[in-house]
Length: 90
Image (cartoon, rainbow, N blue to C red; front, side):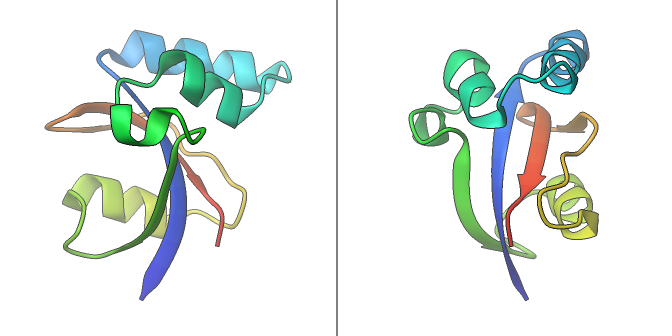
């Protein structure tokens, strides 16, 4: 099963929480990704990671992403790269 996701990668839980709070106040996910994400590959595309499947991302990332509904945004998810905020698009 493949799912399409975007993400914002930051180094700290505190920063991830701060970004989520900004989005709760109306900031757009894509704008936050361009401004804050440390993932250079996805940053310029508003966080778009594209289609993923189990085994292509960390287990923590996959478990969180695959449990989201379409357009739902995750709480901060930690893996070996840092803290992700994940948005499922399909």
